[in-house]
Length: 149
Image (cartoon, rainbow, N blue to C red):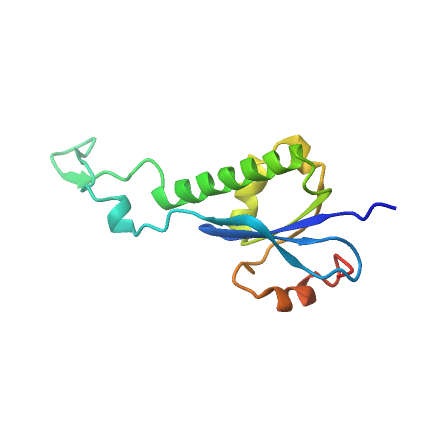
């Protein structure tokens, strides 16, 4: 009987890594080449220009205009889209059978929004926690209810 290969994505808004479990008693192993790092620019670097100025709709007062979106949130959404694309490519190569998502809550939402149906179909579990920095040896206790490691 073929063992089921489960990939576990650990992610936050700017970092991610993928570990693997090949079945009960096999433990957790890092997946080679599956560490990702997003853009970690500071607000001053992202928004180097001063905001535009505008007149009030009534009167002669001026005020700074708000940017149309939060650049940090956009960078995190882009990072999630990049992760989803990498997972989609690996799924097409049959590198894994099922997927466990462990991500900070906002990142988990970004991943869900970017995920195509093919990837949604292989999701085995989701955990809304930021465990990306947790060592693999400590990860087993967080996955005890999900996988037999």
